[in-house]
Image (cartoon, rainbow, N blue to C red):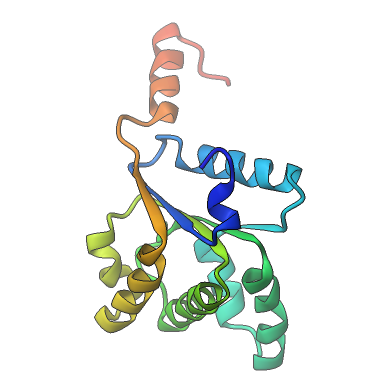
Length: 165
């Protein structure tokens, strides 16, 4: 992925793993490299962006969704950070991914939720199957492991008696 070739080929990437293992950091680094290569990139915190899009008035929704569909690379960070997406958000997510798939546009998604559980967060098994079918067809899955760097830093700071950082 470091060559950004996957974007030119319309492939996608899914970064899965526990919180604090570097998924967002890697996603932002890839987005930064893509911007530096003059690609159109849209980065969004997934649940928040989907909520804004899903509950917009229909005319406004079409206007707001256009950049999500047209970007060379769409980064949806921290998908399913919330317990469950409302049905309107799940439908919007599926619609964006479906349109991007048809246009062969790359998406990069980070989540701390394993894909076997996505149906729980999307609230619909058939919709989840459609999302994963399109998303996984031309993508790479990267699994992050380990302990949270934030918790490691906090433990180190507490061990040193420095509580004010």
